Amino acid sequence: MHEKPSCLQYPAKESLPIDILSHSTPKQDKHMAVNQLTGANAASALAQLRATRPVVLNLTNYVVMNPTANALLALGASPIMAHAEGEMAEMAQISSSLVINIGTLDELWVPRYRFALSEMRLQHKPVVLDPVGAGASKLRTQTCLSLLESEGVSILRANASEVLALAGAAHAGKGVDATDGAEAAVEAAVLLYQRYGATVCISGAIDLVVEDDVVARLQGGHPWMPMVTGTGCTASALCGAMLATGQQPAEAATLAMAYLALAGEQAAAKAHGPGTLWPNMLDALFNLAAGSLQARYPNSLADGR
Image (cartoon, rainbow, N blue to C red):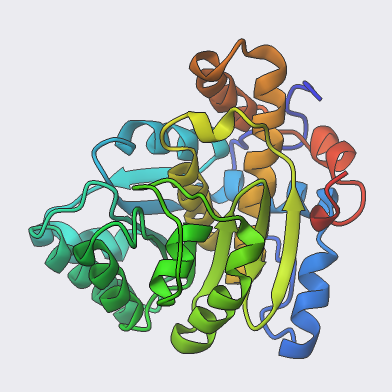
């Protein structure tokens, strides 16, 4: 569980990209293919990320700028945290993906989100939206819906209460925290996918990746993870990292959640509580190795153990 990196070390030279799934995979076969992703596939995808170190542009909240940047660095991506509209077109040009996180929402930020999203859409680059606290206020909910309506969002990474709120369903969210289980949001997630075309990744005790049906269920992680501010935001950032390597949204979300779950488990084995969990999680993300990924996920990533 605590192996040092082997073939997944950061390479000195660039290597050729490794595609897990053909991007021409027929829709009817895609769900089966995602569920067949193994630890070996996850190792190959991580090696590709570390070989190319793609730039991930983050329009994120003040609380998690530092931890999500460090998580992206630890996994192998190159983060940029920016929010000035005057430089956003240039930032979009040098970035391979965009993560929008509305955690510390302000009316001043809304046009910046829209502009950044439009720039990425013009360049046919993928976007992750983290609708932090959707349902807690009309501003949050309406801002997220307006971004989804732009049709430029590739992955909506949220908790169950946020998904239910965006779909207009009854929910029991508590501020930015979820009190609904992931399975309770499946129908709402399918509705959002059909309405906006964004793959929905619901984090919880069991993580779900949803399109026109549940694509994958992933078990893992540790109960301390929700007690650390920014863990969900980190999941969104890692989704952005995997999109930046050219993965399709469903596989990118599945891989990101698998990496985070394993890192959380390894970190908890060394930590004494939430306070020491986070630094150990950064180390675990940095030290993710082929052996530990294949041992943790010998069959499908969606199999859990």
